[in-house]
Amino acid sequence: MNWFLDHVPQVAELMGNHARLAALPLVFGLLLALPLGWLARRVPALYTPLVALAGLLYTIPSLALFILMPLVLGTGILDPTNVVVALTLYTVALLVRTVADGLGSVPEEVAQAASAMGIGRVRRLFTVELPLAVPVISAGLRVAAVSNVSIVSIAALIGVPQLGSLFTDGFARNFPTEIVVGIIACIVLALVFDLVIIAVTRLLTPWERATRAVRGAA
Image (tube, rainbow, N blue to C red; front, side):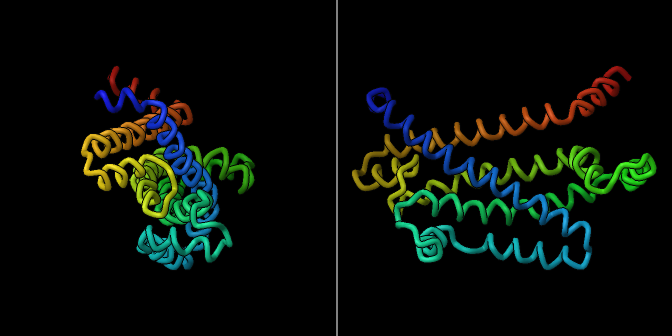
């Protein structure tokens, strides 16, 4: 505890770096997964190839991908962009199937009713289908968020500063306290991400609260 109190600014800075490196790929990955998931849902013949390709991306070892990124992007080995791009690929890999299945969970009669009301395909997607798919997409996003927080720490092995740096430094100096602080900080960060996603999901799905209230009253 004494070490932590003496190094709060350092831990806070590393935690901020870690949060940014985990959050940006989450946003970028979701933006890329939405059209891909929609395409997989819209064209059934593409579902299996897209999901299989996404799954294949996730099998690439993270450390190997971090090292490969500078060769592909032309960036420096310590450039955080490498981590952001690599984790964006992992996030897309996790979310493509989630988005497709989320859109697939929308009742067909609801989509048909929207079309009967004169709502066009694009408008229906954004005002009917995606909102109804939010709970399913949110569940996948929570998994991706925890995964990103975990994988980011591996980037410490190539010198990118974040909470994983506490692990490498603690092992190098045989100082368990630093490792424990890093583990706890990662857990706290993952919980914060999870709570934020839950809160946003509730804001985007007010009808879910109304439904639970009606069931509770019944």
